[in-house]
Length: 260
Ligand code: ADP
Image (cartoon, rainbow, N blue to C red; front, side, top):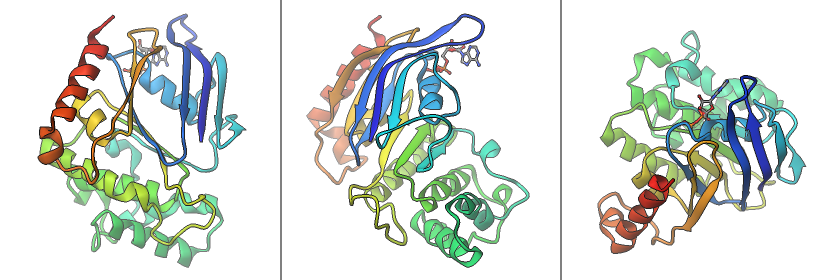
């Protein structure tokens, strides 16, 4: 689904943010990306999103080279206050990107309502984002991404601005929706569900939600190591985090992040 080869990016001021990044992500996989602050995680994600043209290397999504924002992509950023439009209702925020799908207005609204129900926000459609709590606003941002039914979902510290309890709820929500992306069912996703790339600075979170954790080195960011997470499903905040395998993995990731 996603192929990154020899990716490097140097900003105009000469700062090399990432270098020689190699990463292959299979359809339906959830890959967490961790690394020390400033190692180029967001730069990497922006390059995959087609928001920034890398100075070296190749990126392909679904076999097509990234040259601009790919069609089947959605992004959830950390700062929901800047990603939701305050003058649009919750429903209209969620429905807006569906114009790009060429759907009729009634269909856009129906799909938006189904996605809101999927994230447990029935009854908020007519409200404005600023009438909701931070956690609810981030759910709206997630609903907007889900309504679009992307083949690839990019998330940049998506739960970094909410309190600890809400963060756990949102992690579980992500796990519950990832397989069945489709409120309305989608014929052309090959049945493999969404592919997700999640950038986080939270080591426990990277292991808890991930099928695989990719650790980047300090600047310039390169792939330091990859760890496969084979924890039983469904994951549970109390049970999973108490498993010896979880404790071992988070220690390994922690060591890898701290190693220069
Ligand atoms: P991370 O997400 O891992 O914290 P970023 O990708 O945000 O890292 O940034 C990597 C490095 O690139 C940092 O040193 C940052 O200051 C630098 N950087 C990010 N954006 C720009 C930019 N637009 N121009 C110059 N340097 C940048």
